[in-house]
Length: 172
Image 1 (cartoon, rainbow, N blue to C red):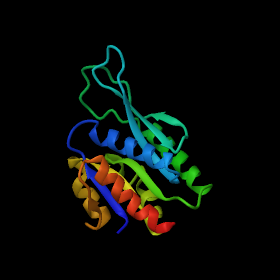
Image 2: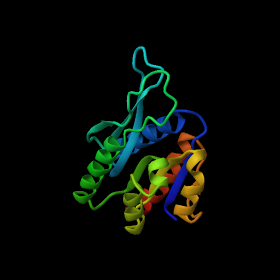
Image 3: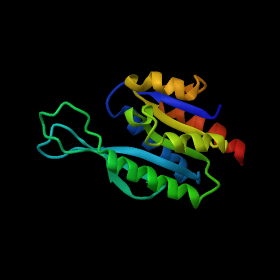
Image 4: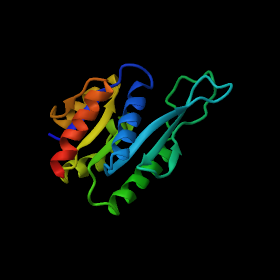
């Protein structure tokens, strides 16, 4: 199946990998869609801001709530995430020849049936390869969603890049 994921092992690792691979592929002429996450440190804040960038060069959305340094709960701004989902959906309508859909993470929102889940399914039905990160908390929901058919990739930029190019070049 043209569906792969990178298991999240340390904070920010998969975000950096997906951003690097996406930028590399775009520079080589790949037609990518989706989002990559860029974590931005904020002076005086214990938690970084989670920003998602719509690929290839669309809007950037701050998907983090500013809950204060002592907060321990989920910092996801659901409304901002849904705005990013809508922006990716619009970009897909105008670009039928997508080489690869990249989504920063199959997170809690996707595990609950929302977020990017429907767009992921639509792209797989269109036979477009999908690449994303999965954290351990949402792994069971992801496995149920993928039917256990997604390929697990090592958290290694060259391995991820190779997988992406394997499917991208088949379509050419």
